[in-house]
Length: 350
Image (cartoon, rainbow, N blue to C red; front, side, top):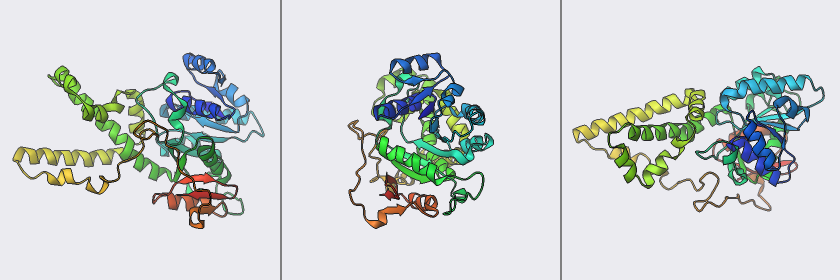
């Protein structure tokens, strides 16, 4: 396994795979990150070309979104210099559409499977990484179902999502990492991520910014308790990382922010005029009994939550790995199913 980028996610992935006995070679442009990773017992390459020279079977791009295009080009150049090397290329970014564009422009589309671990913290860098961050969590794996290979193994286009590569990524997630995977299109992922990740980052920044600019800032911070802490946690992270995430997903974030701004403006008007406000506070009612059980892949007590897997799942939970099975996974995952196990000839969902 080759991992390019040893920040919070790349570093945690490297640590988790090493702990699971998977051979890993990694690199990072930061001398400090490479030194720390070597000290942690990892095999480290000084640059992307050297990493690729080791011919890993899978290359994970765990670099910032703003660097994705450049690094994809470096991997493509290394492939041109190594006939016969046939790696799967995966990313772990929080936005998928722009990454696929960069991968396609680099000539890597036929090798690419998108992935996004739904976990993280407000911290960054290799020193903030830890193996349990990515164990037993939900991942999103993205494909282009309109471009998957036909059952006879012939790609529908040069941009095809290769089912064999998809199966390899799903096995990595469900076996070595003990996680589950929702297989979706890029658009479905990016719209959902805007709602549950990117817009919350923006709103957390706004809350922190309101206090930062207030004349009673110090008093307010002295009074702050759980609601402010929980509502602003992610705003303490790297602002450039958050900015890149939000701007790269602008097509889905911007309309969601406009809806939120409209509702908040209406609430402010209602407060000014002493009008009813129940409509605002009652809107979340359909979801109040569906509070997420996991926090960064953990139960509320902080223990990694490993998904339950039936020893003999019924036929309706199985998808044979034949025909256009990736499209069937997309259809079923789009209504809430997740892949929990990859058998030799079957994907098991729950």
